[in-house]
Each structure stands twice: as C-alpha cells, then as structure tokens.
Length: 107
Ligand SMILES: [Zn+2]
Image 1 (cartoon, rainbow, N blue to C red):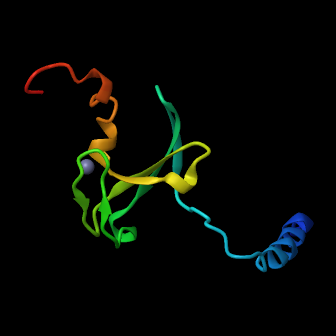
Image 2 (image 1 turned 180 degrees about the vertical axis):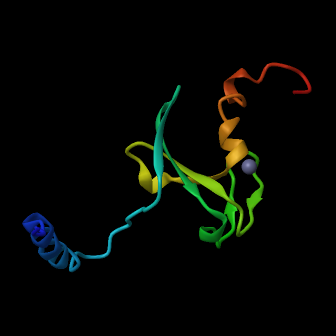
C-alpha cells in the first residue's frame, strides 16, 4: 500500500509564503453573512465577547457596547470603511425602528 501526497498542497504552501509579504491591509476575519435590507445589502460579522476589547457606540440605542460583550459589526456591502458596531439585539430590531415611520405619539 502506498501513500500519495498531493502535489497541489505543496504548490499552495509556496504561494502563501510569497503572499505573506503583502502590505498591511484592513483584513477582517471571522464569519460574515450578508443580509438584505430595504436600504441595501449589509454584511454582518459576529464578534465574540473575547474579541471585543474596546468601547463602541451602538447607533441603534446610542448606548455604549462595553468590552467583552458579544455583538455584531455591520456595514453596507461596499462601504466597509463605514462599518458600525451594534448590540446584537439592536441590529435585529433595526428595521422596526424606522426613522421615517415615527408618527405615533409617545412611541
Ligand atoms: Zn444598542
């Protein structure tokens, strides 16, 4: 019985060694999903509590997201520079708090 090793794997390793010299780029790692909303396609990335180590201002409730709080980072598909950190619950309810539909008194 003979074991064969893939030649392709070795070629990939060489390619990665070269790529490691690439300049610093704002690479975002983690699981991302794309959600379709009335105002466009939003990329939503989940941030674990362990990865959250800064204070952020949630645009949904105007409150701070304290470190170690699992939350989400969202941005319009092609506007990653404008990404915002949201409480997970605030992002989930974002469509409900539609600013233009604010007609009820006391709402
Ligand atoms: Zn919030």
